[in-house]
Image (cartoon, rainbow, N blue to C red; front, top):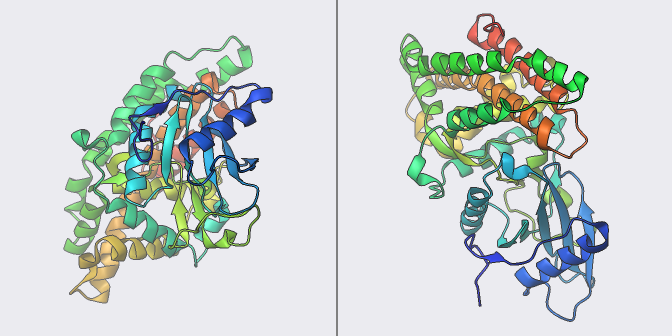
Amino acid sequence: MPTYLNNANEVLPIKVRADAEHREADARHVAKCLAPDLLPDGKALSLRKVSGGITNELYQVWPEDGTNGGVLVRVYGCNTEVLIDRAMDNTVSAELSKLGTAPTYHGRFENGRVEGFLAALPLQPTQMGEERLVPLIAEELARMHCLDVHAGAARKEATVWRKLEEWLALASQVHFSEPDKQAALEALSLKGVAARVEWTRRQLAAEPAAAAALDEDETAGAAFMEELVFAHNDLLAGNAAAALAAAAAAPPPAAAHSSGIVFVDYEYAAWNVRAFDVANHWNEHAGFDCDYAGGYPKPPVQRAFLQAYARACRPALFEGIGKAARAARIEGMRRVANRYTLVSHLFWEVWAIIQAKHSVVDFDYLGYALLRQGGFEAHCREFMGQPPPPL
């Protein structure tokens, strides 16, 4: 009999059908097949659709008698394989499950997988900057960045640049028959976006040389942020959840995560520069409205985040030095993280252009791409000290 638990290579030969008549019954069926210990034969099962999923459809399936919180059935969204490498996604999820970082990986079926259900409430963008949550999120991110994940280890590189090249090629093939959509696409100027990607890459490649002009401690902080780690790469509010806040939630919750904060949805997880993960998370404080002027974390919040983060994953960075030196190292970290916001904006702008063509979700992806373009331009002026390259 195949072993599905923490094994991304085995696929249950069942597909959850798209029509409403069969979808919920199919979700119950794959849940029972892949998590028989939690959902044994003979027990009646409850099911509810879990809100918050944009890329996928999510269902919680649990025993009606409430003996446990059951599982989460993740059914991949239509055309999501265009942007997400599902083989790598499952490999990463299975490995992180083994390491105790991600929800339990019960196994995969033809168009989705079954995971452990977490008693957790997704954060809202405005919560991510709260004083009590900032260090918890930072510490959980540090814990992830310390993992020696073997998935994709053959290519330990800043994946974001390779992914941007692939996505730019896909985006160049996007066209719309609707005149208003085509006009919106052309206004974004994909050729100009591609030129901005190369310009940003050159600017950040020169960062170590620029950091050399800083004092020794700022240089040390900057170099720390340039290191490669296994990164989440999509740490928006909905992918960071307060585990203990849901302890009294109904239906019956599964066991809460001990840290108080848990990350979910590792679909874009890969090796990357640690500064990208931090910068991308800071951008997400602004939410889908992209109000960077009001939502992007102010310097005191950034410093609190980076101090908690560094103490959790590299305490030696602050050992044996005085208060002024510690402050200088944090400023060096801030400098690099803030500059990587530009990469985050480009990443999700190109993503949104592709989604506008392929996604069936009712969302203004082209409008979102324009907002991220505006974020790039504003942060270029603020963090690079110069106007953005023209489109």
